[in-house]
Length: 196
Image (cartoon, rainbow, N blue to C red; front, side, top):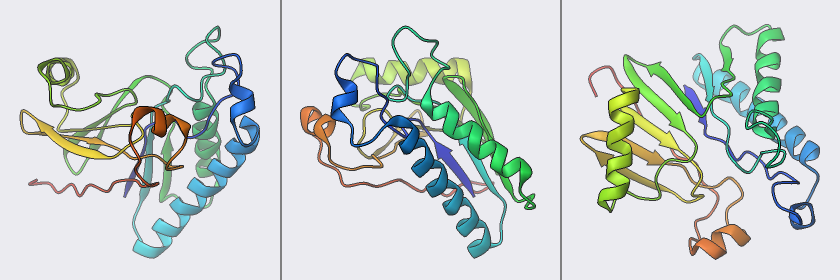
């Protein structure tokens, strides 16, 4: 089982001036909840299905520390690094975390190449959006792509490649209201086999 964490695991405090006044709790508390939740999920999946559980990551934009700091200085990366440490010191070799701090992450699943990229495309209904995916296909070489950023769920294809946009972990919030999307909290599953 591969868990693809495509960023925006939490909401930061200083990307815009009043951001800290629009969140329910400080970022460090959000980090603790995210780490506890994802680590628990990894262990439950591993124990339930008796398989290796691997995490692939890319950072989002909501976890940025500030507009002035490096893009790598991101609360998502702190979550990923903490999960990586927990996996490294655990007694379970079937729990693996690849903490990637770069925008694009490619990885293999059953002989197929997946790609994580947080920003992705809003949809594939226009030539401009299709051109973006075509450009990534040319430079990144992937069989399927998963991304976040838009905080609502969809699955599409481009040149026969699956493009899956994951849902939001918190569900409805002021951002989803402003964007006009009202999806409940959800995450997607994709089954990859060697032949399909």
